[in-house]
Image 1 (cartoon, rainbow over the protein chains, first blue to last red):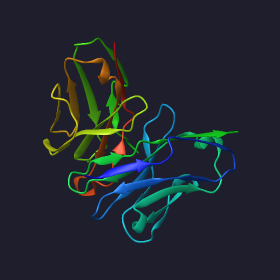
Image 2 (image 1 turned 60 degrees about the vertical axis):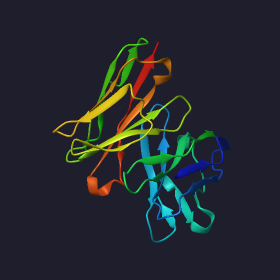
Image 3 (image 1 turned 135 degrees about the vertical axis):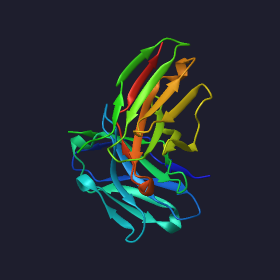
Length: 113
Length: 113
């Protein structure tokens, strides 16, 4: 069965610090990977996704993620975080048959001004 | 652009009561997904529909049922509510041939007292 694991449950950073959130997945076949963000009190929004091709994916708001097949990882990065990046971040993989998203446990990011 | 609409946004019920949550997908999206996000938890897939037929089923309790109507909107019916059903219920929609791109609604926050 597919699963997603996020290493950090809560990350606290100061503004302008660099961010890297870990995500590992377990699935032997072709994977479609996603990072979603959930701002306080809001719904899930897609940050970026990887289907194939260039393993370095750029998303919205300056985020990027790198797919490393050999490590089963899809880590999210941002060179310089802002206070407005305070949110919960979910890594997800999609079941290719039914289309259901399988989410990791989430990482809560708090950025101090 | 039109987004996924969910109603109500907030719902408070007593134990053993019933609740009906509604989801209106983005126009022309024919596939609807339901997810449950408990407090501090990651979203868990419940069920999905395509063309009024159930297309996939996750960890949905037998007390819950759902359906999709001819206009593609969907309803999640929950009976014999328990305290543990308190959660944020998200609906997402997509085109059936683009299940990898799901758009989430704002969610319905259900509180069971």
